[in-house]
Length: 97
Length: 506
Image (cartoon, rainbow over all chains, first blue to last red; front, side, top):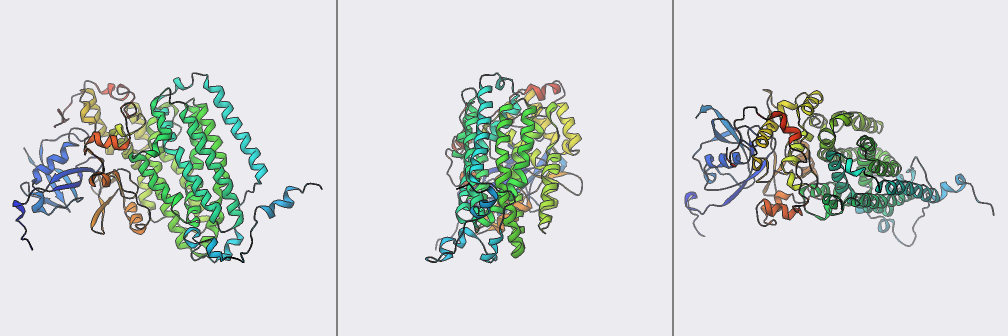
């Protein structure tokens, strides 16, 4: 049996997510990798919606999974996100930038 | 010898049946096709259609209908009527021709199955007429639509649609394979003639014919009316079947009606909803999609099922709430992913049109207005790439339509919820709670792979927008686009614009 490498040492794997951005009207497919941070996941989801259908606001964005806000530097692998999981991306209205 | 009078022979010939002595009844009428279930075999002997027709009468009537429809078509072929039709109405007809022509052919197969495996000879007789009807409908719809190919390449999808892997026909294939191809004939009689035809299309075709006349499309109105009169006859296979099933197995009867009503309602929201509330020119709108559904579909459906001692479906509240949202979300999805369509979707959100939408749907601005405003601003600064998709909408694993149904939170805001299910080692996503429940109960039935499933499995190459459009069969001459951007954006020119995407990035 081969010992599994620590998460941070494994090659990034593709993780297609089911995502919704803030008040958008539709869930979308957003591919990310296990190495992406939540900040990058939020940006990847926002890319398809923000300023296209939902007006951009001057706030940071936060990834929410099962009602829990995930830290911006946490990676997809560390968060335990699996292919086809659902994420919500919201503006973090408490922290204007 | 004098000919017998109709009433002297028809009762006998419409119901010719006999007891098999050289072979078991089960061999002729196997359960997996016939689906009698808890209903005793002999109970089907009482099956009786309310409107009876003989073959000579059928042929004479159909000949007359065909002659009339084709005579009008021939007369109009030389006119300029087509050139004067509104683009929105043309889109509604392209959607109809492509979405319906080969569904009529699938219905031929369904009717043939009932003609062979129906558990009463009168039922089989009625289904034989039904399959002839559906063959005529497949032919007339294909022929009428194909006439326009020379003037507009999108009409080529009259024949092409169901031979492609475009997401719209995949959604419809999933619905109709479950309704017309896969079920045993008892379930089919309740799903197709009773729920879909009696409940939805018969009445919709009446309204559609009126809309066609309003739009000046006499040819289409004529075709639809000709088809509708057949539907009214063969759709009566549902009633007698339901009556017998309800007596012996009301739980099954309720479930079959419930799930087919839901599937039909989802498809109607995608196709009829946008056509009525967005594509039809404002001056020609007689009622909103919600009003149409309430007046023509819901009241009649509830009366029908209550007459048979059944109840409203378990999802009724979710369905009724959806009348204010489903088709608006689907319209926005159709418009945003317009290169995947074989018609030209009108946005239909000018100031006057928005005022009409708010009058009919008081929450429309709160749920959809902000997003259309961002799209309008992008069009007005010529940032068109921001109005075009770079990924796929998530498609529901039951209805295969985009998951785009906003519901209201307790704090008054509107959000799209995620309905998911872990099953057999993977996660499925659904557009609504009822789609999730139907998938769970019907998970061993037909479930086509959604375009998302196919994309993630590597069936679509290259894995980008071009690859997706190629997989769907779209070519540049056919890909949908808005027919008239200024019509709904010019009134907003010059207003302050902020928070829109710049060069693909916000």
